[in-house]
Length: 209
Figure 1 (cartoon, rainbow, N blue to C red):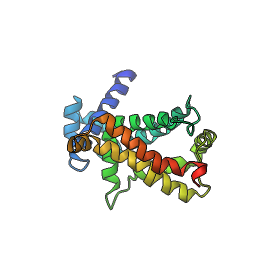
Figure 2 (figure 1 turned 60 degrees about the vertical axis):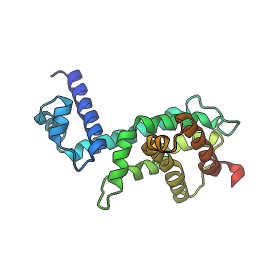
Figure 3 (figure 1 turned 135 degrees about the vertical axis):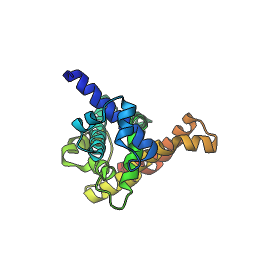
Figure 4 (figure 1 turned 90 degrees about the vertical axis):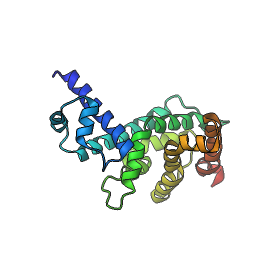
């Protein structure tokens, strides 16, 4: 197998595992099922990954890396976010990201909620905004008009509970919400945006301090 084929095969295994973990849960998922759905030999999966746990760790690491890249990209060409309705540009980018990653987010939330969990990727994502390597991103947001408290604990709590988790909830419950309340996707997104502005965004505005 050449390098390109190996990369594609590994990516297919990861995507298949992500779908299966999302459908039946990590604990109930079997490597045999992943191999069958991915169309590969079970031995090949163990060639790339030592265990099912390592597959999950790889998926979680990719989620964190993708989130970091998304935050960087969201700053490119984004206008002053406190003028008019410019924050909608960032908001739409966040919505697109969580919807694209909704399967692995579902797994991340389920695994992080376990009492014995050692894979707190949700906590890691919450910490991302105040991590030392992303300090430059935080400063860039501040230049665009968003205020961040100096206290890192306050920032972490604010970003996790009022910033990150609402988007995760949206990704997890969007379809159910639309079906149960007979609401369109656009109407749900528009109302979610207005609610998010009045809660999380208001905490980032200097005038609201």
